[in-house]
Image 1 (cartoon, rainbow, N blue to C red):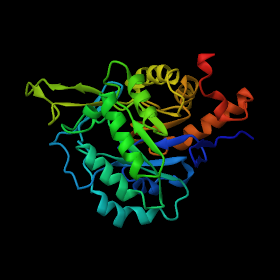
Image 2 (cartoon, rainbow, N blue to C red):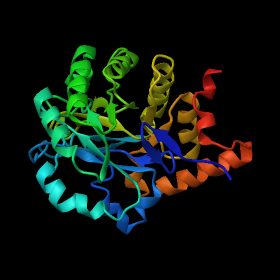
Image 3 (cartoon, rainbow, N blue to C red):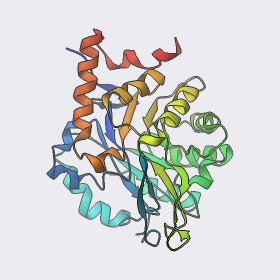
Image 4 (cartoon, one colour):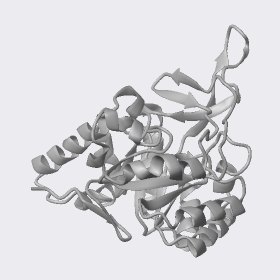
Length: 303
């Protein structure tokens, strides 16, 4: 019997596979396809203090080996999330992680403070990496000093584990990860999407209403893997790998590069229950390799 459980701060994940924010709705939508309690964790779409309409359409287009989106963090706002969504997690046996967003540091801090009191929420993922919003988002995530101040401020008002989701649209992502670690972040998630665009040759204009979007899917997995590998050598808090994971083999590559847990993103749109298949594939790999604990894979590619 192999051990798939992972400990992060005071949280126990029954397995290292989670849904990625923005690709799994509020989680409960997928409960009709399979029991989401079988996942190590569910990370809901980015939540803000007040409801957001998001960016103008079109907001999604498929690309070779991936998808480009400019949703713009559309969400129902924290009050409706608390009243309508959160109670539905009372009987779901998984770690609920809320991805939070703010246009300025004060908004992040206020939202984290308000969510701190809800026991159903296991941790917060701080989104400093969305490329599709003009305020906050990736503009925060590109400056190590801003990341330090932001995470430090949140830690003062929130007792839950804090995960910082980083943008790949920087020169050195490890510098940002080090700033998050210095501010006492409990883990970092990398990577978010890579900025890109598509032009409609009929209209001769950018296809997306926001002109630019975030590229995700299989096309970015080698980039995410490289960034996890580089960051693993610079920090000593857990890394959560995300970016183009659509098979057990790619998931295992992320562990070998240094990730302790992984998130499934765009692949959820193609195959809603793919996370379960990846969990089974990870277990099968460990059994075949006669490795009794998934944690023993972490960082092996550095040896």
